[in-house]
Image (cartoon, rainbow, N blue to C red; front, side, top):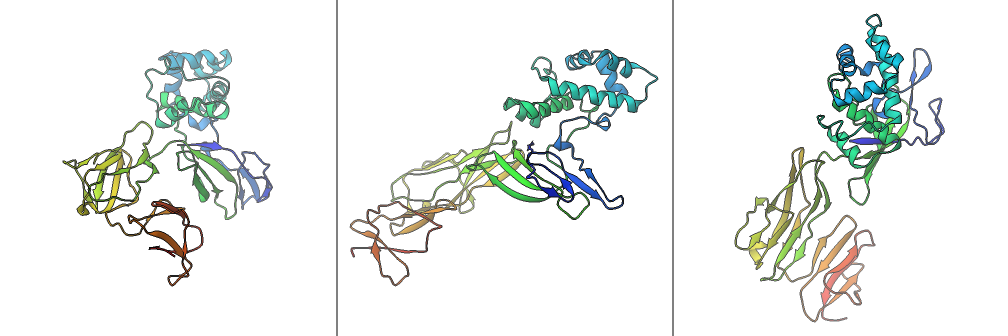
Length: 359
């Protein structure tokens, strides 16, 4: 589920002037050599006349106060609008125009959702997400439209949760690997040139999101090892976990616990426990795997990847010091104060490391 963060980064684009902060996208009609606004329902919460289907049934529900939502909407229509909608001599097209204007006025100037009013309405995941962020301004207008779509699923066309027409993503990053993901991109509209650039915020996850991966580690025989993963579930769902060693599923036993939880515990570690551990995280809409994490009982110098930006050296040996050099043949220099585990950034200059009894 996405909500628009309307950023057009200005200038003249394809003959259409777009100002900073505007919300206009345009496309070129080669036949008439003219520019027109690019239609995309996800850009706006406004209703259009064609958004209403089963017009007579929809109006009948509203005018008969068939439910609390219908009662609320009808009471907010002007008397002129009520007369137009119930006049058998008025065309469906005119009634659709009247509905679009009247409902736009309601969703733009009111808080439509009320828990009692919508008690019998099943909210969509998109609506539930907006409700939980306490929407204001444009977000509130969008939320108002969504809950009306929920209340009248056979009478109001469902607007897209994701902007249509996106031809080429311009960027995609997340904030501290959390769920607030922002995506920018370009629109194409049957024309080869760029027609606009928008920024959207991801509000609703479709598959589990892993925030923290399990860490590789050294453990001496007899020690305990713990692998942890931190993941976020899609809205309204729960996560299930399955841990694997070398691709073989684990189960709880005398020494192993948490094989179906975010934390895997291994007591009294021995050499047979060494290998790659991985968790499968599942939700109703999808499954993801963690990055492999290594468990070793080898006391010699080891290097583990901690993230895309750092690594960690570990060793288990007394009276030895860590040394580094620019090549495998040296010269070698002692890394002053280094103890196990020792963190080093991957993006620094290349270095070779060894353990030595002294300079």
